[in-house]
Length: 65
Image (tube, rainbow, N blue to C red):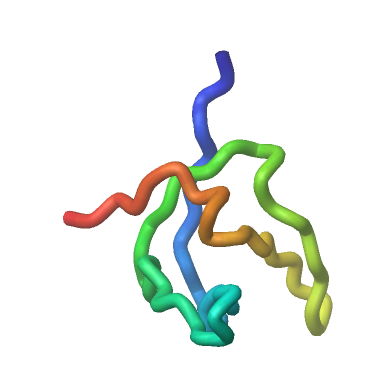
């Protein structure tokens, strides 16, 4: 069994669009440390910097002090 990966949230989107047309409130916020599997994120490059993009549903846990 593989250990989860850990990362820090540096940006969040507006939230998932619900069937009702409303936007669901995000559970994570900038600065949160999160755990996720290595298969969860998509790798993207912006201005020669690599980032991981993860759907909120794929986050295993939020680690808060």
